[in-house]
Image 1 (tube, rainbow, N blue to C red):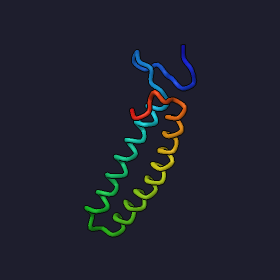
Image 2: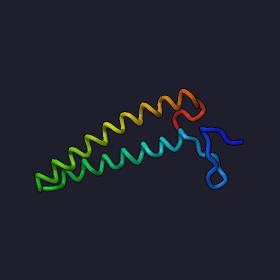
Image 3: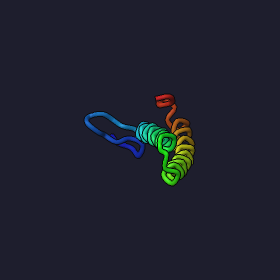
Image 4: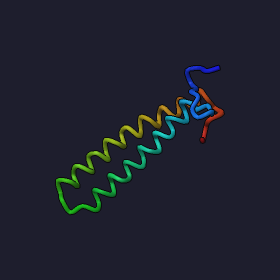
Length: 81
């Protein structure tokens, strides 16, 4: 039986919480890459762009982290996964 918090994928149940956590990890990786690009370029315009994008990504990360906390309180068995 499926509910709104579960989806069957490849024979396994994937919860919304686990999907959001995977997304969060990807966002953090993207942010780190943007920060690294900003540090490694000599082009000031590119540096500014990468820095701005990294800051925007951090804002999104903060929002998604809040959502993860909310989901973990709704699905305590997935806390820390």
